[in-house]
Length: 432
Image (cartoon, rainbow, N blue to C red; front, top):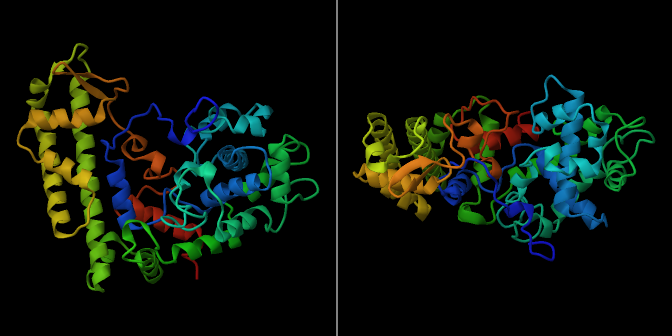
């Protein structure tokens, strides 16, 4: 909470967007952590660098909140890279940057810290579970996940210094150190203009240009032992996958499973947890498909359809077949290899019920935004739509959504494995 009137921090304000997690976000996170723990939603090095830089600058007496500083640094780095690579830029903020391209005022801190000049959901928001020492990569002390209250660990200090103080060259006239330029920029004393061009800022702050020291620090954490969270009994989970990446230039999901299955007992349990995670995601996506089919059936209905009638439509019954099969598969796998999230098990058990009306009622009650039930009738919800996008289907707020800058062809099947592979490559893990 913040302020005299207890206004929620931006971290906890709900967004008016489609949510296809069916209230299973904690289960999604559980399976991602079982797959590879401690990553949060981090896909590339600079996500972490921007976050720790925000904490470091406030620690050094910048009179702003860490959230605002980190978000603004991220926005400035992305905007500069966009300006320098208009045709190839693929990170967040493209829509706002294009709209503001002719407005020089949008380069200052006061403007870029505002969502309308960047994005609603920043990359930094996906770092909060990757930063702590107990559940993440160890860049902040303790176990809190509220960004404004975080304190840098020694590792976090090292990463912040690599970004702020130890780059080979500075920014603009006088070759200012990054830390000096950012401090002045936040206070309104510096910015892009006659002596500071976007290319200079892009090369020092942009998402595509982590320094060798930044990459070295983050790579070391990817190859470190797991010390907490749901996988504290298997400290090798990250290291095991890094070892596979190192030894297999063109690895694949199936090959990874096969190699883990003939390894030690903990590796075999890990492989089973990967299968559980895939079965869970298959179940959730089949429910997304069912919701979409239901929404399409409602597209030309303005007064609602009795839920009994909707559940009897042929296309709904067919979609329910996929839901039932995927739920049965999930229940079978978690019975063989636990532990598993209890809420997902309860959800899956409901989805194997033979009563289609009850199942549809249960599923729609877990949504309520696209479709809603009122007096036994299904009607359009406040966010009604059909044809869900990738951003709708995956959870952008926790980093499950594959960023636009990442190749969507995923040989690793699970987004979490693709995420780890992308971060490992961004750290220089794929170079000899």
